[in-house]
Image 1 (cartoon, rainbow, N blue to C red):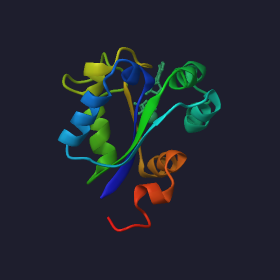
Image 2: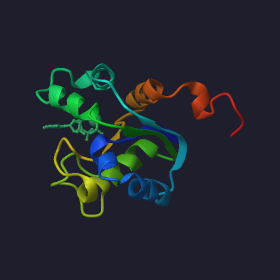
Image 3: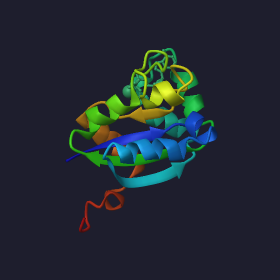
Image 4: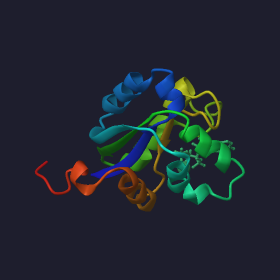
Length: 142
Ligand code: ATP
Ligand code: MG
């Protein structure tokens, strides 16, 4: 089993697409281990995306991510990191395969509906950014 951090970004929350995206997540066989509606501050968004600090879109991205509520989820499945990124599709919705979440719900390369961790080390950092061990069932019977 593997876990990944998924975010339903503010564009998809404001467009009332949380339910539709959750349906795809569960339909694809992921177990939702933890989930919360969050309203990130600019500073919290900057901390989350610290690896992108030098990118030209950093200011715009972190302003967008703190523009309204987002849903953070801990998803569990075999090969969860790769599988969730496949379900999301390419970063740019215009290049994402038909039937992927970003193709169907994203509207621009920045407003692309969802986030997913890209490797095991970033998944561990990102899950820890939003969830305490207990919330993930680390210290409880599954
Ligand atoms: P994510 O990390 O959100 O799952 P990703 O790994 O596909 O997406 P990254 O390169 O990590 O893409 O970029 C992080 C986020 O920054 C993207 O999801 C998107 O919202 C935004 N972004 C990426 N490239 C651009 C760009 N050229 N212009 C504006 N925003 C961008
Ligand atoms: Mg990324």
